[in-house]
Length: 385
Image 1 (cartoon, rainbow, N blue to C red):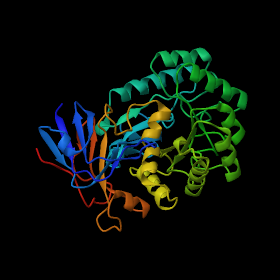
Image 2 (image 1 turned 90 degrees about the vertical axis):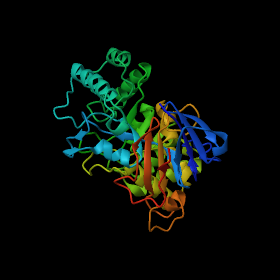
Image 3 (image 1 turned 90 degrees about the horizontal axis):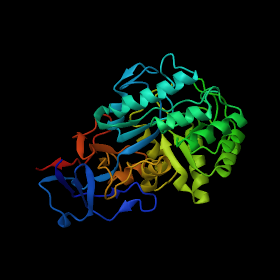
Image 4 (image 1 turned 60 degrees about the horizontal axis):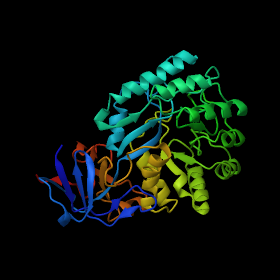
């Protein structure tokens, strides 16, 4: 692949909560990966992209989706939803269980077969370049420690939401979470009321006891626990806390503030929990970032990190950071035409949706111009050579 110099950048959002904005105006891309970050004069390349002062951030990671097979959702009877997410700046989507698949099997053989098939299918299928990390078995009572071992050996890395299936009582929940971790599966637990997918009400005590890697949609999927219970969950767990677009926005802000007061914003991760009864939101992650910045007064760099590098760290992924050696998944964004902000950061703080002017995945411009879903960006990158 070509060596590409991206120059003339404004804000460079790293995705790293420890250093959310980098002092740089150029990124060098080589063989689909980031080869250098610094000043344009430091690099040379046969191909040049002039950013014209717009901002860049890592491709966003949606920590919570429910795919079926292909770029189609039976829940919404909608085609092309994953490609639409890419137009919203999301380049990696992580399955929380393929629960909307018609006739989803619940026996141990079927659960394992579906997980392995989904993992293999999306490993070979990348709509508009998106990485869909699928094959997340939903814990059912029939599954044993040996089943989890077999899944891990087959390459399955994710556990669907504990509580979406028949596993719901505390002792059983702890067993399945423990077996999954032993087998190398990254786990998450449903938190809150029942959903259209048939999940159970999962109260604070069970969520805390599970010790899962991710507390899924703490602000509701879509129904949230009361705030006193949310305080118990945040204080009683030690791993990632997920806020989703398809949840309670008031409680999203409440939980974000709890983590900020604790000095643990590194635990905050973002997702959409879509497709769902409330639909598919191509800009769902970006809208949640805007909510946290404009109403919650969270620094835009930290909000972007919650949807990129922090997801990467809690999930053990390679994507999600603008750093040397990482995949060149880059989203170019700016204040929308007609908005009040001067740049992408001001737009987010004022409650606007930034306009996306280009999306790159592995160094290739999969969205080579303005997004079809965001408002028009004031400044758009241009390929000069």
